[in-house]
Length: 544
Image 1 (cartoon, rainbow, N blue to C red):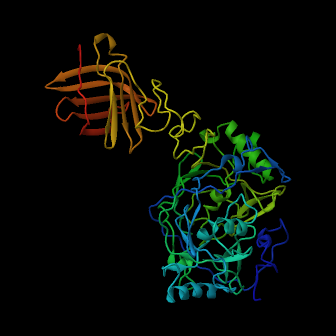
Image 2 (cartoon, rainbow, N blue to C red):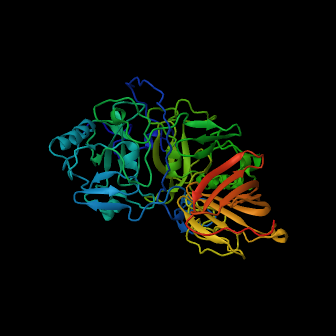
Image 3 (cartoon, rainbow, N blue to C red):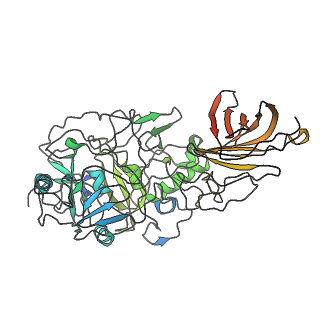
């Protein structure tokens, strides 16, 4: 059978030898190859992490419970929501509408188990004989691509994928094109029995699931893995597929936090459970203790934030640089106190619900273990979440702290709030001669039938849909008319923040035109819209 997993004689529980004493003594590997560690080239780019798929919550002993207040992945469901349907079938191929990747539907297209080099060769040969579904750019997927197919809510990835439109997916390990950063004669795989992602010797025989090169039309973009060294033509280091990493990858905010510029997530700079003494900082914890620790940070608004959480599997895994080990983080990372060891995630293993997923920051492996184990904790905040639990995440909800405001809500007239997050819907219908004027890129709602006694109650509202700007005046302080041009000045709020002033110019002509300047509280320019045609309407200003 050839060389197998490090220290094991079965690929199923493939990471146990890497747990450094948790599941057994670490097996010493002789004949270590010298791996040249190169820093990853960084380029501008940002990605949205998807949800893990987990929607259920569990006790330490694996019993399903209600999610409210648990802080588990099933409750928070951080990440970009999956499209429905997730997959679209086209003949012998299937497209993942989440990532935009096209896959072979047949999970055993080669009808044969292959060593790693044979898997790379098979993809090349597939292209040389005409390809599949009319395409000749098939490759062996990298670790990020293959891992994206795993649904954390399902106990058996193979069964779930076969239900989604794939067929013949085997509950076994599948090759990726990504080589192990520690030992170059090992490569990464994803186990379609349980979702594990670790390594196996390259002369082990495994399955292959070809994917087309490149992403197109997905809800998210998968990032590069970080691997830049190539060990064979067509491998991850050769093709470097995925969205480029920004430079710098991380920003030290100077507040005890670090922002990952690739994902937008904010992490504590101290990677070993920092916090006040009441939160029992700096020590490893059981899974439930890790969840409780995050809640404790929020109760004290640690570092000025009250949205700390235990990261889900995809969030913690997103930190991994697959060109590195000990730790498997980008060489220029600014974090302190990083433990090259096992870190908890908030995601329960659907395969074994009394276990939860963790990430090994020594090697970059991801697998599960008993929730009673003591592992390290690294809190995260930000990203795409549904803070108000109204079913709409922060990337589409214009006010994610108010469950009554979301894209599915009904607009309530005269409350001054954009209830349905749709600037094209009137939010203010004041008395007088106010009208709504739909215009390309912006819309105005105006009340201009004013006199000296009503200047303080007149309202001017402005929406710029591309920038999602919402301005509403709290008072109109001056109106002047000259040569058919009305100039209105006043104070107001931008996206519910006070202290802004505005000057609107409205030309009564053919066609009518409108322009606007909004200034910040410090009198610097915040926004300027040049005069644009409005579709109809006459502007009348009375009593100056």
